[in-house]
Length: 284
Image 1 (cartoon, rainbow, N blue to C red):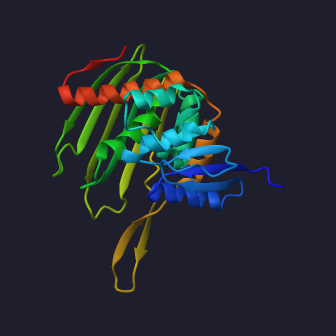
Image 2 (cartoon, helix red, strand yellow; image 1 turned 90 degrees about the horizontal axis):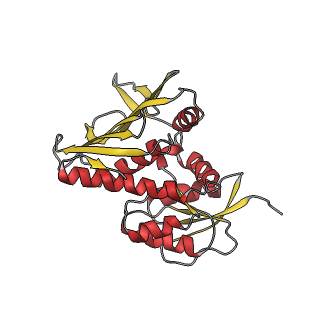
């Protein structure tokens, strides 16, 4: 009899398919099954991963929380009362898809374990190709969530600037947030890369503290291919993200901090409010 944890996956689309495939071929977990948001979960499941996105995200989360099982969900794009009610139950943890990068997991562990000392500043940038749709939801929120999980200092002030710099409306976002003590966050995400860029995305994070500065760039891996015709081209390459993400999601379900999950929604709401008003927003 297998003692592997049985995981149910909720959602449709590429991310859900990648997660389902990673669990199916895992030697650590067993796939209980996958379902669309609103459908009944497979029987015998022990953990739920909600990979639903967009309009289906909250209905997927409701299916997960109704099961009474531990739930890991992609960071919520909605900050309304229904989202807060789901997170307030204490069985749901938000997990950024960026945690699928091995290098970012190592960076996260080092920062949280104090390798840099007391944190003074965190810089993060995520750039994708021009024309990327739903930039805030698909790129911004995963970046915000990953950074938010690096530190424990409460945030007190957020300033957001968004601009149209590369041919699409609001295709560049710049965020500055201050903690109640010394911490300064500087974040940016933009659909700024040309279609011909070797890698479809660029990610950079830096953490500066009292003892050290840590830097990680997980998307710099590129293969150079030279053909018989004399041409050379660069091809982006990095390992599949879903297996590492599944590990992170399962491990995170042991953490029960509803107050912190709700604080992340406050952060996202403040970023949006500041973007709309053009003014700083104070976090209570």
